Image 1: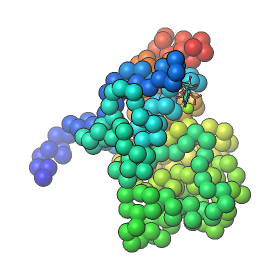
Image 2: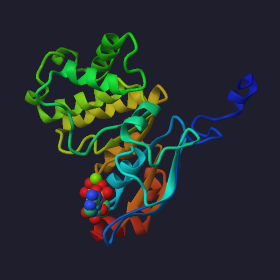
Image 3: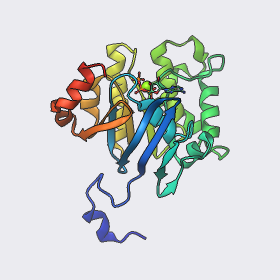
Length: 254
Ligand SMILES: Nc1ncnc2c1ncn2[C@@H]1O[C@H](COP(=O)(O)OP(=O)(O)OP(=O)(O)O)[C@@H](O)[C@H]1O
Ligand SMILES: [Mg+2]
């Protein structure tokens, strides 16, 4: 049991044990060092940005965190337990949810059916209350009106919202978002920003890969910058944007 005093002594986002710890993770494809000796932690409740030029290794890091791929060396620890090497479905059940750079929904299924599949694959899969969980998740992303729509017929932006609801219905402890606003119109960028800010407000831990720097600046407490497979620096959005190495990595196109 946590004593009554310890909660007051621990500021938000500075709890003793990180929710996620990546230690010296590396992954190479042939001669390409996509991720090389990457280490960072994410505290419970933190909203962290992961930025870097194209090909920096951001999606590869997400694949290592979500069980889609495994590191050649190093480790990924979630809630004190090694998760590298576990299957993607196992990692999902343990409480790591993710969205994909290219939206992944089942196009020939309805929105409700998509959410049912996601719910079934989550930590609460098979337990009563799926219909309520699905309704709540769709409501949260303002897609309740489209519950019976065929997912493949929705706009790209609406499919992004469905994909987000598919993550939310699983109530993950950590959500990995790979370019949540890439290719969406400015109104929807605003809307997705509001949804993620509301999630953050209720204590949801988020790790966000995004090229839209104003979006990252608005949302994230802390930003990690990658280039050429390695972490260049980390700090507040304002701090990292002043860093000469960061400017060079982005402007130099590596
Ligand atoms: N399965 C793979 N096989 C071979 N090379 C790969 C594979 N996955 C990634 N790479 C390479 O690893 C490097 C990092 O790719 P990654 O997709 O992680 O970058 P990224 O930072 O997500 O880029 P972007 O911003 O363009 O999405 C790139 O050089 C990429 O071509
Ligand atoms: Mg990527």
